[in-house]
Image (cartoon, rainbow, N blue to C red):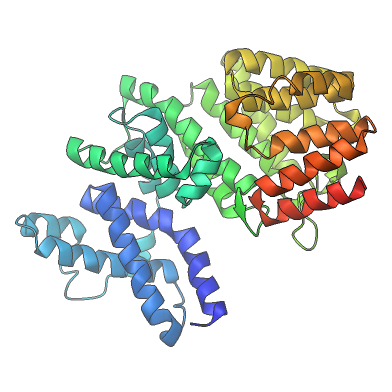
Length: 415
């Protein structure tokens, strides 16, 4: 297989896998079986596309192939006749209309939105809900999910496997919940959507600094959730946060795909439409009395969006918002970000004092951003030898090649 074909298949799979699994889960009512069918379709693509070429509509090809495999599977089941009608009468006799196979409803009936709520069912632990949804809808590997959670990869793999079995055993309906059940499951859904967005915004592994398709998928799901739950301030807060962060996408990488840090970004390249949408969503959230974690994070992002230059950023307000966020959502990563804000508002010594309190925390022991931030503060204090060591350690911990290159260059600049 040529390298070009292999990359094409890999790209198609990254984009189409969540849609494929969600559509199949709606048919077979089992997310584990749906993922198996999708992978069967991928194997078929790996076998056929190198010789036949990548089809004009690869997503439709994969869905058609997977549905045929579903029919074959159902034929082996004692409930063949009833289930065959769900997959599509006559599917075995002719090729389905590809437009119908991949048509998407951008409203509440969206298969992927249903799949999010299935994966976030109370029968699963909170950790399993997030891991499973990232796997099925985000298209992330277990390694990437483990990185997002700061936990060992085998732990994530075990969570996903058990989650699929638990959903199948509980016969969880493939639908968006209503009423009290919707509210109870919403926080898990928001967490999942934001983790998907974050993986697209700053990829944990691979050769690319960003994976824009994941950001787009998360934004789309967030907007659908906002239409579904118009009185929920945290939903609007999450949408505001994602809109504002997504506005920076065009300025976050250079011509060669290299990362550009916030302080060095050309803010003229920030998408003002996305910023306006984000600020409007934040206004709606605050009007509804929102003061939860996503509303606070959106307010922090808004401080950056309103500053036309990096020097104009209201760091004192950001530091205060991070203090409130730390109270609402205690987390080592929040404290790490608060230390950065404090260093910008009150000087690197103040930030370093907070940062040094985090170095012994197990959750941050192998988190590359801790030494990266520490290197930055030490560099600002003129402690270049210590800063270089921290940047080198951060470079050894990250699994993103673009980020590693940036950290190595920062270490060299301290020499």
